Image (cartoon, rainbow, N blue to C red):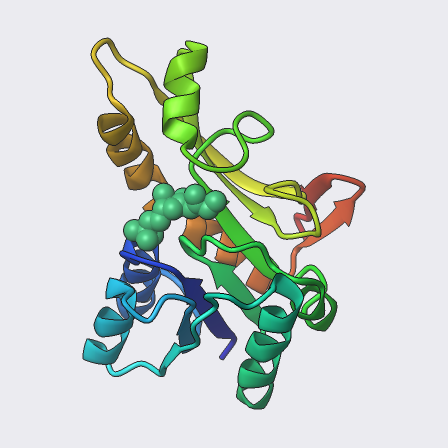
Length: 201
Ligand code: GAR
C-alpha cells in the first residue's frame, strides 16, 4: 500500500476529502502521517479523531530550509511514497525537495499560472476573470510553479465574494486532489519539461 504524508496548516478539508476517498475505496493509499506546521490546526484534531498519526511540528520563527530538514527527519522512518500539501501555507525548503524529488504535490485554489501566492480568490475577482478553479501540481523550488497534474475550472458569477468563490473552488479541490494522487501513485505518467504526460499503458 502506498503511503502518504499530508502537510497542513489549518482547516484541513482537503485532507478530510483524501481520508474519505481512501475510506470509501476510491483511492488506494494510506495516510501514514498528518503533519501540521501550526499547532492550532483543526486538521490535527481531525487526524487524531480518525486515529491517524498526527504530528505537530511548529514552524514559527524557523527558516524554510531548517524546517524542511525537520519535516524530512520526522518522515524518514515512515517510508512515505508521496507528500501532499493540503492547505500548507509555508514554502517548502530545499532539504524536503531533495529528499522527495517529484514526490510532493500541492493544491492551489487558482488556475495556475494565473494567481500564484496568497489571497488568490480576491486576486481573481479583482482581475475580472470569468473563470477560476484549482490546480494540483508537483512542488519545485518556485512558488506554485511545478508541473501540473490536474486542474478544474469553475465560473465566476455576479456577486461573488472571495468566500463564495473559494467555496465553489473547494468542491472541485476535493475531487481533483485525490484524482491527481491516484495518477502519481499509479506511476503511469512521464514528466516532459513542464508537461505531465499520462501514459496509457
Ligand atoms: C485550500 O483552498 C487550498 O487550495 C489552499 O488553502 C485552502 C486550504 O483549505 N492552499 C493554498 O492556498 C496554498 N497556496 P483546507 O485546509 O480546508 O484544505
